[in-house]
Image (cartoon, rainbow, N blue to C red; front, side):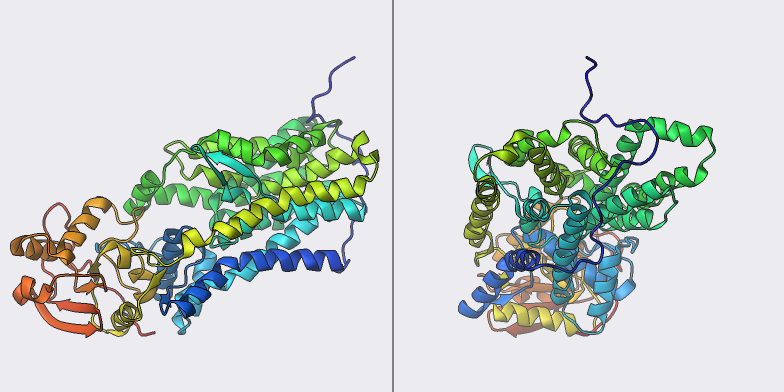
Length: 559
C-alpha cells in the first residue's frame, strides 16, 4: 500500500465538495454570548486600571496590558502622527525622520489632532479588534463546518483557548498564543490576525471560482502594515499550500489559465510590498535599525510546545487523509509556517519571535474539531458532554489564571508610569500646552509617558527607541535628579542633552535650580512635581549628546 502524506491533495481537477456556506446567517444566541465573554475578558485590564485610578487617587496614563512599554510606544506614535501624519521616534532628543506609516496610528493621530487624548484614540481600536477577530474566526468556522456544534466548538477554542506552560522553570502562560491576552493592549496584532483569516477564506472561494482577486492581497497588505509577522505568515501559507498543489499550477501554466495564476501572484505581491517597506525602514532609519537590534531576544520553544500542546495534539488528527479544500490545506500548513517565522524572527533580520504564534489557536482549533469528528471519538457515550468538558478545560483555567494574576502587572508601583500622581500629570499637561518648543529630560519613569502625553521628545523612556546608550542615559538622568553627581557634572549633562525642559517627578529630587544656576530660566511647581525651563540648548557634545542643536524642536500644539 502506498503511504499518503497528511498534506497530500488530489491532482488538479473539479473542485471537491465543500460545506454549504452560511452567508447571511445572523448571530445566534451562543455566538452572541461568546462575543460578550470575549469582549468582557478584553476589558479586564482596563477595569483594573479604572479601579486603581479611582481607589488610589492616581492618574491613569491610559495604558492597557501587562507590558506598558508597548502601549507607551503606541501613544508616542499617535502623538507624532497627530503632528506630521508619518511617525518619528520621540524617545530621543535628536532629530529623527518622520518616515513610518501605520494606517491605524494615522487614524488615531487624526482623532488626537482634534483634541481627543491619545490614550483614548488608541483604546478605540480595542472593540474593533475584538469584533473583527470574532467575525474572522466565525467566517472560517462557517466555511469549514456544516454542523452547528462543530462550528461552535471551533469558534470557542479559536477565540478563548489557553494553556499553562513552564517558562524558565516557573508555571505561567504564553500570552501571544491566547487571543484574549493579546486583546490587552495589542489591538493591531489582533486585527492583523483577523485580516489574514479573512484573506484565507476569500482566497479559498476565489480559487474555487477560478477568478483573480485584489481583495485578498489588499487584506494581506493591510495586515503586513499593521503587524508584519502576520503578513509574513500569509505569504508563507500561500506559498507552501500552492507548492503542495503544484500540479494545479503546472496545469494552469500549460493551458495558459492566467486568470487562475493571477490570484496567488496578486496576493503575494500586494502582501509583500509593506514588508519590503519595513525592510528598507530597518536599513535606512537609524532608530529602526537600533530598535530591531534591541528587540532581539530568545524564547524557549519548549515553553511554546507545552503551552500549545493540549490543542496541537488533537489538531494532529486533522492532518489525517487528504485536504478537502484549499482552506483546509492553508490551515494545515499554518503550524509549520509559524515555526519557520519563529526561527526567522530569532535571526538578525527580524525580531520578537513570539509574534509568529499570534493567532495560532485559529487553525489548530479548526483542525482539532475536524480531526475528532473524523475518528471514532465522536461515537463515545455522552460525546457532547465529554466534548464540552474538554473545551471548558482548554478555555477556563488559563483565562482564569490570566485574570487573577493581571493585577501583578497592573497595580500601581514605584517606577511604573501606568499610574502617576495628579501633580505629575499637571506638570505633563503644562508641557503639553506650553507653546515653547523643546524636548524633556526626566527620569525613565516619567520619560515613558512624555511623548504620548505631551507630544515632546524625551531624553530616555524606552530602551527599544532611546538608543544608543539607553541604560547609561537612564543612570545619568537618575544621578542628575537625585543630586548624586557634582554641580559641574549636572551642568555638563544638561548642556549635552539638548533638552529645553527638566521634569522632576514626585520622587525625592535635588533642587536643580540651585545646582544648574544660570542654565535655568524659570521654575514652575506643581505640588511635588517641578518643571524647569532651560535656556535654548547650544551645540551638544559628549557620549550622551543629542547632536543637532535643533534636536528638541517639535511642532507647537495644544490639547
